[in-house]
Length: 103
Image 1: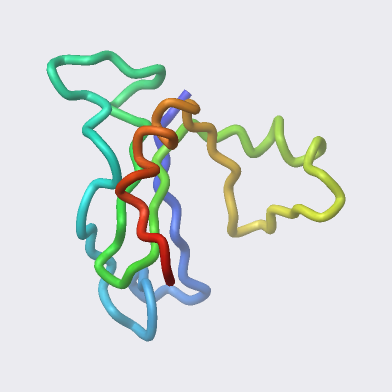
Image 2: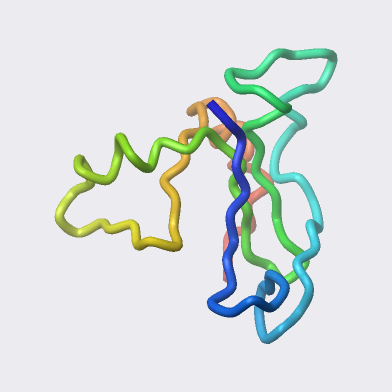
């Protein structure tokens, strides 16, 4: 199991968030899952949820794409540039209060 963070550009240009802005992590969403030496389910200090400077979010989790793609509901999809990642329920529930209510 590996932690992943995957945003890909369609060219060989640097990873961008919006309109060629550089990718910058702004703040962690929710409490630090590793606070006080807590152990997490994966290696290399993941999972985690971050807000990017551009306002979008980055999810760091365990890549379950290969197992999940054949089981996705008909209305869901994962293209060649996407990944399905697993994060534990408590991580998202604990982050809920830090997620903005409006766009």
